Length: 274
Image (cartoon, rainbow, N blue to C red; front, top):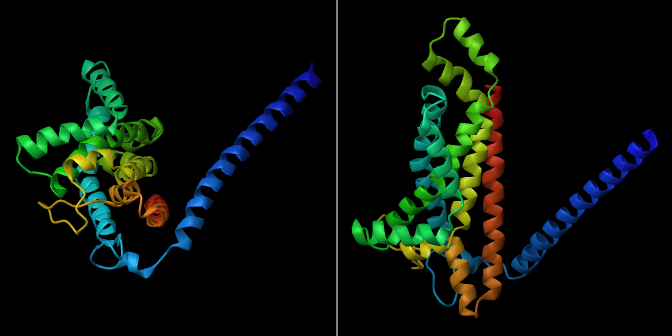
């Protein structure tokens, strides 16, 4: 009996290792191919201040992307985190509102981005009169990532051991002090993980922004149309003349996401130690 269990365990271990190596191999091939093509056609002209048909500069789109990430995360994170605190700490577990919000959040997470784009176009571009602009794009992306931040923050708060809450309350700390001094710091790594996923969705989004932010190749003001890196990559690749520049844009996009992840992990470690 023991021999059969050992054999089964060995087989499962081989399957797990094979799956891991296959996944890493596919990931390595994809990233390696993009970086190979991107580095070959990397040029300083791609980072000139103004875009034209000669330089195919991605700098305006890069700045728009960073601004889009900053504004959407700034708008959404407080609402998502404080909403999670209310739902997890101040709402009765028997309240049907919790169940409704959970179902609604899970449903909104599965809605295709093109639907958010159409909603943003009808609501912000037409109804509110913001036109196709950076502001319309930010508001649309904020609605898109709000359920993700809300649900991840709620799960992060739930993961905090009950002993920490009880110990804080036993020492005389009030509920509000316990939340902000004990519970919230303990859940910061998981909350940041949710924010990272949101940043990845903002950086890689193109369908919703085509309807709301537009595709003008310039640094956008709040009421101006402007393209992000993903939209820039889509437009120049669909034209068929700048495929090589599209690979370089994809490489820069991957580097940006990697840098943001490393920075967020560093901040999480610093806050956890503090």
